Length: 249
Length: 249
DNA sequence: AGCCAAAATTAACCTGCATCATCACGATGG
DNA sequence: CCATCGTGATGATGCAGGTTAATTTTGGCT
Image 1 (cartoon, each protein chain N blue to C red):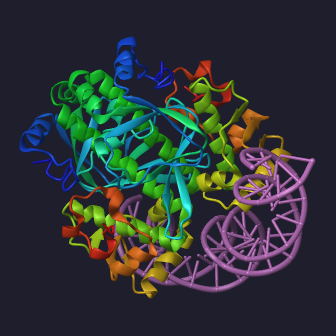
Image 2 (cartoon, chains in turn orange, yellow, brown, red):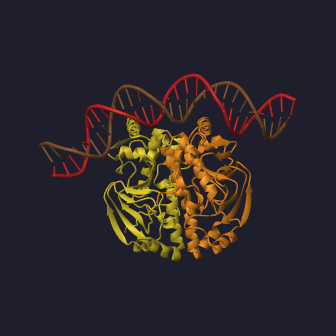
Image 3 (cartoon, each protein chain N blue to C red):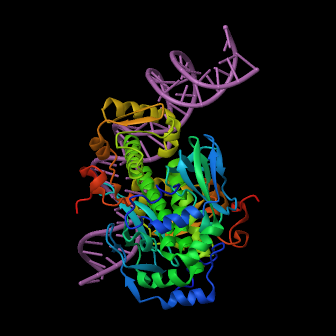
């Protein structure tokens, strides 16, 4: 089962057994990637999309001086360039962070699904819009939060996504990011990220050592990052996220 | 024709006559809005979506102190909360900027389209992904550009979008934004936006007076904002964007 | 015409983060 | 075995943009 994590615990969009089977049967190939490799380049015409099974990938834009702004981090279960199906070309590059494996689904298979299975198509659509919702949270992070809050917000988000994918019990995870990757996520320099990481450690909120993140006080980290997980569309958050992050209903 | 601007000049996604007619027939109502009104609130369950016909709207997230970060500006022709169809609830608020008119399409109509017209469905999907591509450009703006470049980039983007919608010949437009709106777009304070606006005027790049934007030197403004319009997926950009913004093919 | 609130403008001061530089450490490789 | 490179750590310095506050201009209304 390569698709077991796809749309796992996503509100109103989890796959039926038949839908999952259909998606599995559309896989043409399972590919492995080394760490830190380019997977797809902006502007290329894509005829297949990539469902991440294991490892971490990212998407980014370059500025004129060659500096990158990461626009997404992808964890296992993410259909990371599904948006290339309607768009045909991407507006950004895709690369691995760690070594990774992914299932390849040709767009011709998605055409058949789009013709015959409107409900599954709606769920695929949902998955691309979830990425857009995460983009919006990142906009909030860059536009309104200071450096410490940006890092705290990102770590809370990643923790919640990994929990929802079944890849963390909620306190520690390794996602292969260096401090300079974190800088490219948060719109900061590596020097300042280093100071922020130290401060988070000194305040007893979390540690970040050689890509291993350990959350020491999730409640205070959540507050510090103004993190509200509603945008992740996780099904029944009461079951799997701490109560202080729940929207007051 | 309420849908004439929808997906106008969008690469590989312009509507056929039949598709346009189908969409028109799905309109249940045409609604008018006053300026500066809330249109939809985060978390509400939506059963219809809104195609903007006239005027400008925006989407935004609030921080704990009540400060807003705008995550999108919408111009006529944008299907502004189509993503509510797969998502069901929104993760952000929607409001008008100016007075506006919009066509309402119930999600039940979209269900019928999704069942019967996969190609039109793919184009609707495309339109939501175009918004996501714009989100990514906004992430680049906030993460990698300084204040002047952020404003320049935003003005270039808006100019290009209005041209593509047939609402500007490429030098002047009014979109009803105040300087503090611009601040909420660019992650700056209104005071600093005021300084930036003055500097852009003094450098002969553009003027921004009482919501009227006049571009004096589009080439230099484009360079200053590191603006590359590829992410807008405009069909055959050579025809309608200046040559210095064309990707070197 | 005259009133009022919203928007724009400007000044003075301050701070968060960038920039530049150096150093330590461990892994990798010839 | 030493050279090199990626990663992390830390100090010194400067400036872009934030903050606060006061004033002026604008435009919508009666």
